[in-house]
Image (cartoon, rainbow, N blue to C red; front, side, top):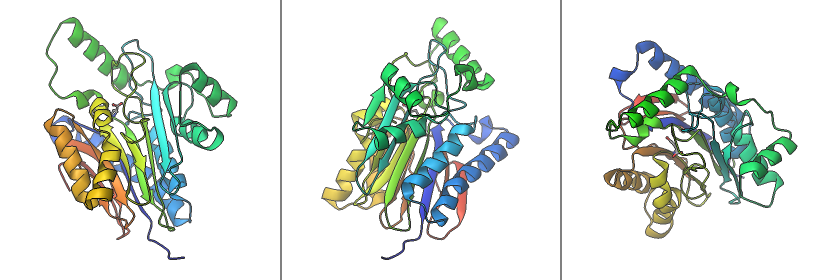
Length: 312
Ligand code: ASP
């Protein structure tokens, strides 16, 4: 069988990420964290692991990093609780698994993976999901383990803004964040994984695009693997992942064109955000319509790169 050069990309959220808003120390910390998380997935690929194992490893590392809104460091709902969403999808088989609105597993991505591997279902939510996670033997953490002072301050600022009826700053992605990874392994298979705390001060019960297969997470070896970040409601309405797939599959567009156009069209309608994607040839696309997107990638050159602002 032909061996393919492994390729991997990840994101740590998109939004109003501007050099003027980030201290040099924080900027350095973000680059280092993105690089370390990418390396976690890349090492697995270089050892011959599947794309699914690589994206899981990268997202587990991102979930443990409090700088990003997933796992530890997840944002708060309007009630001051955490409700996390996650999904995985395997491009070789279209097997997928997802959880929504959970708080308990240290690694929500492992909960999504357990749904894929141990049940006949795709998406679990609520009390049933919590019971499933406990029975699956996943490592659990108490709610206070997930919050950070920065996330608490963001919740308080948003609730205060609403109390005073002050205008929003016009960028819904400001309150967001998500982590995700996509990869192509040495067998040429694709996989995607996405994990998020959702949106600061979201209505309890709100589910974003991340666990919605075909919206924020998608993988098919014939087309692409993608993971989105941004204003989830728009990515759901536009079925973003599946829309890119359809343009590649039926209109013969290449990955860069299909992914960039969908992100641009979403932006024009108010849906800020971006995505990371890889196709079966190992091409990577990292389009976003917000001022920045935390991202890291290693293409076929083997060089690891990280970026926070602007386009590449
Ligand atoms: N897409 C996520 C959501 O809507 C949030 C984000 O990526 O910023 O839940």
